[in-house]
Length: 474
Image (tube, rainbow, N blue to C red; front, side):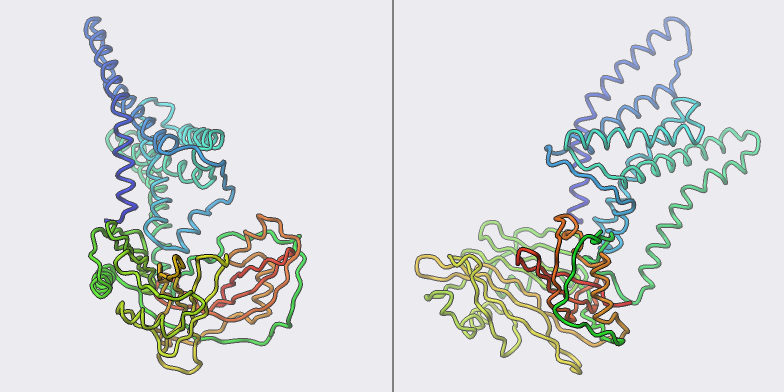
């Protein structure tokens, strides 16, 4: 089972523990009310009483999920409507879509219970205001207490969930009561759930018929960069450009598990735990400290070496040759392209070093390696240990040649705020940016293809460097 779903179930179990005392108290109150009604010879309103009991239970669970499941943090807010939907579209992963769908489902009980509790809520506008008001109250409390994020997407999805619940209960009541024009009203009540189903079906069908997947880091909002002063260090090409899209192949769960098992056997550690989280599967051994993270999008992986599997070099990192690193990787059973050359650097000029290598595309080749390989080294007590391997090299197969943006158009997209990390420039209010270069690269999408993107090297006003990307496919 996906670990995000397990986490949701865990929160539900914790919420039930929070709700049970309140429910028991309500049951005692109901029992007392029933006893009093019986003594007076009055009819006890069971339907409303049960609806009230369930509504209090829902309220307790909702308050726990939205306010009391974590510790306070920094105040956060989002005023971009449908941001969560666009993020879910880009990632097209279970966790992202559950974030949207669970926010809808969370308020469905409110829409069901309110019309059973009071007849005034059989009016659509009354339950609409109740759903929106309840969601707004929770979002404001989240903002005031720094428990969660004030999110206009939550306002929309919670209100939508309330109306879906109202439509369901009103449809059932209409069929049971069969009052005047009940058939027409039934069709009207069906409109909201059916519209939601059609929208979701359109999204998922639209994704399936697309020739390629989505780039997970593609922009979901347009950054406001109107106040940035731009400078160009080169003259970008304006003529039309084409580029190949390559196929790598997305790993299914069984293939990924097989890879992880074989990798652990070759390296020499036993797998104690496996965690499933959307497009990543983790294979771990907490006892030895070995952890393997496999990306299902393209089969790339990251490996944190444990105590028993760590190769040791008896020299300073700057004295390690590419051949030495290759030998260490081969001894671990890791396949690496021939003639690869590593560059060793130290970000802090202290004990931590990185040995990085890059394999570039060869135009016209039918099948080829592409990507980067980075090994993290640690120098201590006169010896160098290989701590971590970040293996981002894949085998590409040419798929189709497509028309793409020209470099000049890509630069304009950057100016217009349509780059991957334009929001960072907006957030820090960077006043001046120099575009140093614009080159073509390839990134994995959600269907196992490598799409062309433009890599833009930027220099900020304080001489700090930054790398940004622009989607190249039109």
